[in-house]
Image (cartoon, rainbow, N blue to C red; front, side, top):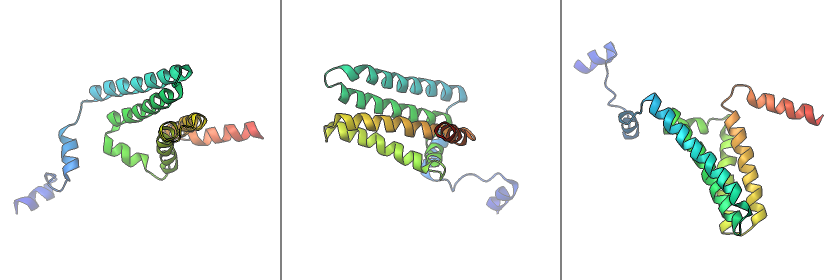
Length: 160
């Protein structure tokens, strides 16, 4: 009877939540902490990408470039987990509007490392890094309302 009373009054405890949701609720961060860690993680991602680009011209630089550029993109992608939480980030990544961009981006991250370490194809690694950049850009602008439409209209007007 007490449980029914709590449900009807809106004071029901979240006993139905799964273990993951309970852990995430217990470890919430304040807004300022989330923003600080977002900035730190995003800055590390940019720094890794710039460092990878600078190392491109060294001997074995293609391998270093691919690793640091990929790590930079992963860090930049992971930084948004601090703003919205990891579970919400994963759910939003695989929404129908972002599914293709997410799959291409993750595939390019993996193929970049495969091309550099297993296949030993430098040109292919650089091509996959370019595709990483394009997929990450397309994925990122999906969070801005009507940005994809504006980019598509811009390119179609430039090409016609």
